[in-house]
Image (cartoon, rainbow, N blue to C red):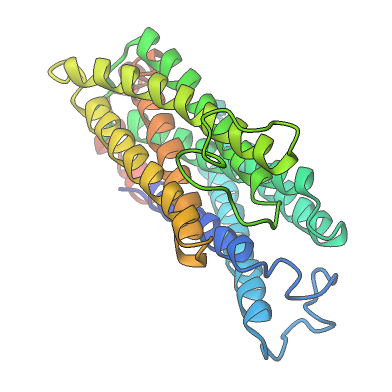
Length: 311
């Protein structure tokens, strides 16, 4: 495993941690823990950390800074060693651009005092960074002979479609969380399958739950299809298993959000599982992408290249 690949994997895990902390910020309503200051926190670059909200919000910013430097390091390595390889250089520079955009958008979220639409866009940016990092890891793995590509154009495209459905569900869930009202009962809302949709709170929760059912059907049908082909697609099948299990857990945790009256730990788990489901589906799409198989075929010596092993 080269330094570039190690750093890309570390950046992926750091971004997943950042997403989880972002969920904790939202769950504990700590988004303004540093006031409306950015990049300072309550007027200081190194705040006193006297309140829970300040600690949580500053932790989020600190981890975001670490992720930013990791992706910057990734871009520098890509420029040094893969300048003539646009298949790796472009997505890496794209990830850096997205991280910079995320930082500026994070500032806007604070300035706008957690406006729901801006928070949703911020979430989409985070999921996009995860997707690019997974894509980069797949590309490098294919070029170095460390990834067995299980090319299937249809499965790859379908995985992307299901992943986009999961992303839409995450976006609606993020918007729902902007409503401070106690969530209605689960699985029925106010004792009815279809509640009074003139009630805005009932409406947003109903849309979220209805979309969850649609996405669940799509995901289960798709993942079961992949699992049936596990002899030809063993790695893809493992990602499909992961997505299925995580979605079941996500559903139970979503119900627990209601039953525990939005316990911060449960809410944080809900977003974290969502990020992992998205990542599993993107990984499935990458590992079955035919273009990666062609990349691997063009790089037969990558696995033993001393120049690459030293990076």
